[in-house]
Length: 220
Image (cartoon, rainbow, N blue to C red; front, side):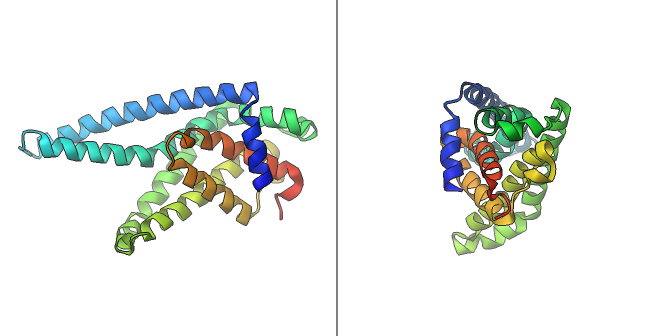
């Protein structure tokens, strides 16, 4: 896994992958800003409807806090969904450079298929995290329990997303065994929490999975 991760960092020097990185980064930032502004005004409208009269001080602070927190939670959803749309460009670049034999047998899904898989990814993330919300609240008293539960649940989901990208291209040969998939998901989910690094994570996770599968370790 470490070797595959190191190779994925090298992939960032590839002109084609760098172009995808720029597109994913710009689209993610724009999407988060639009969602943030929309959430801010929605919260202000909600407080107005509830007749919260505090000269906008507390409602403004609360809106800001909720918007920032939601930004962290939504970043992973938005970044991975946008990466889904360009995932095949990433896989193409890595396979053409390192694994031309496997590239010849891969079947590139259509853009429509990528969009549909992105929507399924979004629904999975939102659905599972909403279902886990009571667990997150119950574990708050432990201090670290909520963070651990969040990491594990989202690591499983991110690992599933990355594996699905490869299965869509290579069928069963793109599958990753459970432990490596969890490790990849954990690294990716943890990286999503680090500013600036989180912009690279979807690209790196996809490239790492390609290297892992094609290096013959996918079933270990």
